[in-house]
Image (cartoon, rainbow, N blue to C red; front, top):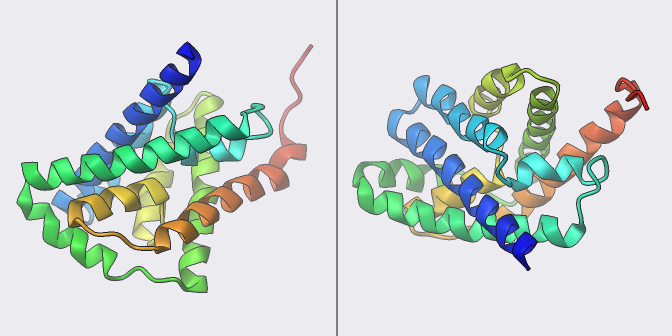
Amino acid sequence: MKDKITLINKSIGAALLIALGNFGLLKLGNPIGPVIFAFGLLGVCYMRQNLFTGKCGFLIEDKIKIIDLLIILIVNLIAGYLFGLLFSIADTSIIDAAIKKVSTWDLSIAFFIKSFLCGVIMYIAVYMYKKGTPLGIIFGIPLFIFCGFQHCIANIITMGVAKTWHTSIIICVLGNFIGSLFMWYISKDNKPKQNK
């Protein structure tokens, strides 16, 4: 039970960190916002919080339990939406930017591809962090934002700020998950072997 409470707490922490980065993105816009957003994933990695998009590509590699990954996802989504609501109260100036962003989302193949590619970048960013460099995060996060790729936890936070809901979140979750696992799969044979 204690392990599950810790899992939930770290999932709430991850949602808060991404929400802070997303707040900066909505507040500042391009070109500064995407760079500031990287703070969120840097915080998640260095503080060892549980972010779905940072964990799903390591499902097999790190032997993460499916139930634990589902808990992380659900808590990230619920907490992220609630943090978005709170931030919309704290600063109403970000609401219009959030509404505008949500209005561009749809259920298209293009939206899935953008979610898939975000998953690819998230896997690379976290993998590079695990190898001792934050450069994957520092460059990867602005890259996916400038390219218009879709991140499910950032998107749910934006929905919270906009005080709305969009079914594209389902496509985004699937795209992020598949993209991360795909990147793990095609790169797993190229990774250096651990000495035993």
